[in-house]
Length: 112
Image 1 (tube, rainbow, N blue to C red):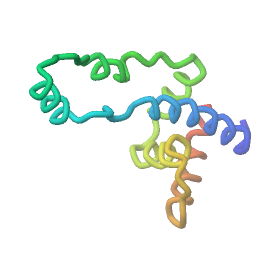
Image 2 (cartoon, rainbow, N blue to C red):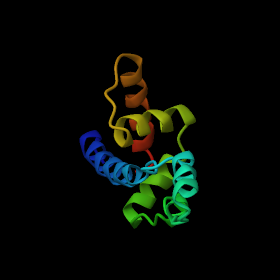
Image 3 (cartoon, one colour):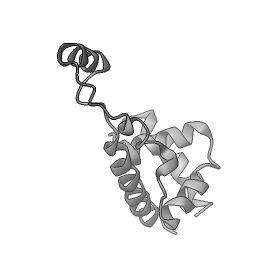
């Protein structure tokens, strides 16, 4: 697999994971505000369902994503971090970070 082909694959992989990360977020009302509302109104209308629905255990990636995850897991921790920063977090890299990414991509190329 050529480097441009692998980068395209990693971009798609990163977009898939980025979309799963953006699903998670914070509650629209803080716990303290909810308690104050309950005390003020006397109505207990709350759901803690949101606390359990965003766990990574419930995410079932497609096989191609799972394959890339597996191969990335064999890389050095610094390489995993820079690949996640570039492709999942979609961050722009500079200087030494770009060199580290190139080393990580070349190392990953041996697995793909």
